[in-house]
Image (cartoon, rainbow, N blue to C red):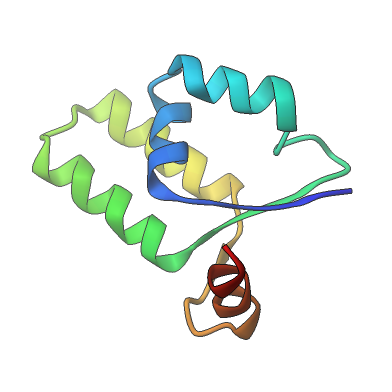
Length: 88
């Protein structure tokens, strides 16, 4: 089991079906059932803001909403996040 905290760029890559997202999926499988994957509340806000700024159409906005509903988010005020940030 592995734990992953995805940032905005990675999640955006998944939404756009980018080659690097396929690489991440192939080598790390963050969405495999055995793994725990989450995003921070900041990532959720950044992606929602980006969708508005770039005037995403309804299908793309719906894909974002569906994706955000599937991935649990963590409040930024969480000691484990600060610790991982400090380590990397």
